[in-house]
Length: 150
Image (cartoon, rainbow, N blue to C red; front, side, top):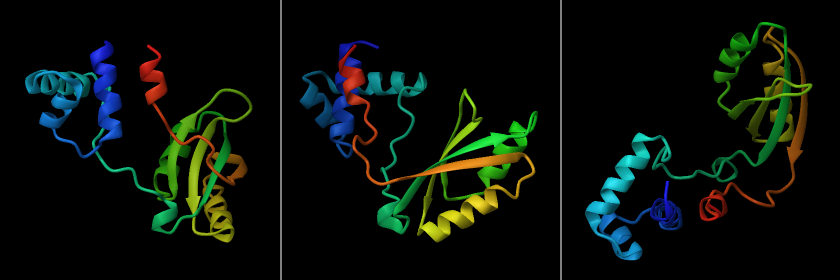
C-alpha cells in the first residue's frame, strides 16, 4: 500500500457515495488509475465492503454492551456456532487472558440485554459471562489516522 492507496481509502470513507470519476478528480489522477487501485485493494482484502454503516440505536437497539465469555475447554467452535444464532451479537473476537471471547451486543433495553445473556448461557459450551454496558462512544471506529500515519 502506498500514499495514493491511503489517500484513496481516506477519500472513499469521507465521501462514501462518490463515483470513480469524482474520486479521480478529488485525487488528481486518472479514472482508470482509481479503478485499478480499487480493484487491487478489493482483491487484497483491504476493502471489505461498500455497505452503509447502520446505527443499531437508530433501528431500535440503543443499548450496547461488551460481553466477555469463558468457554468450556475444547468447546470454542460449539460456542461460536451458538453465538451465530443470536442476531443481537454484532461481533465476536477471540481474546487472550482470563476470557476466551469478547462479544459486542446490542439490545432494546437492559431487560432485553439480560435475556440475551441468559440465552447465551444456555449453551453448554459457555461457562461464564461478564458484561459491561457502554454509556457513550468517545471515539467511534476509525481507520483514517492509521492510514495517514504510514
